[in-house]
Image 1: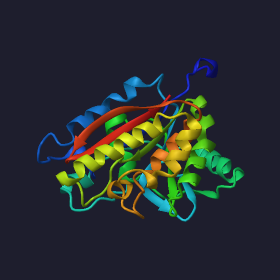
Image 2 (image 1 turned 135 degrees about the horizontal axis):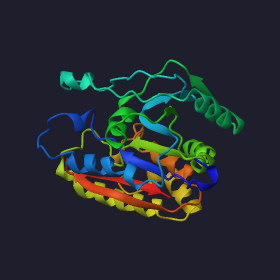
Image 3 (image 1 turned 30 degrees about the vertical axis):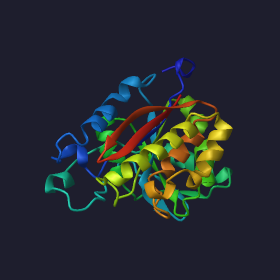
Image 4 (image 1 turned 120 degrees about the horizontal axis):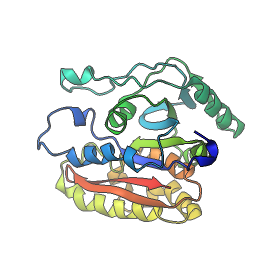
Length: 271
């Protein structure tokens, strides 16, 4: 495809649900249906078929940034206690070693220490939602890790470093959860708290880029922040920092929201 005809790909923050939730029975049966339907329709909203995907998952943390560099990564079934068939799910998307090397170089040039990991596979924060979004598994994908310090500013900067790749028809996806307190799911005492936090998060995302970055980097000051993302375990929110950085000046908007297991869960898009 002629690069001059390409439109910029958006940057997306999506929820990936609970473990392999979209591929098993649940009670109530419709718990994850709307979220699954949202993920299934994402591909049809893109300006064109992406050339590749860069995925930041809440389930990979390292001391420094790392990038998957295997040409055909295996799957990591990093969920526990689920039905046997969910450990036989497949997703054969290829890696893209050339892009991985380029991304690592871009990060190092910006003072963000990074290296290519030629052994690591794809975790469930990647393959579960992408199995819904791009079931053919024919798009090249690389995964990026977080830093274990979960520093919001560094992860916004990570996204900013990747932003130009969106103009090369590369889709940047942050896979996490806008609410992630494992002890609170299903507890109605957290319903209103999650709504209030979600309102704050939405306003932050919809703010002009400089204000957005400042607010997200100080997310811990938001109302009920640590009730929604317990301190030291905010890894499911960090993908939003990366995506917001990759957005550049593009405005953000909420594209999905519902109450799941009595808590508010949302997705955001930057065009």
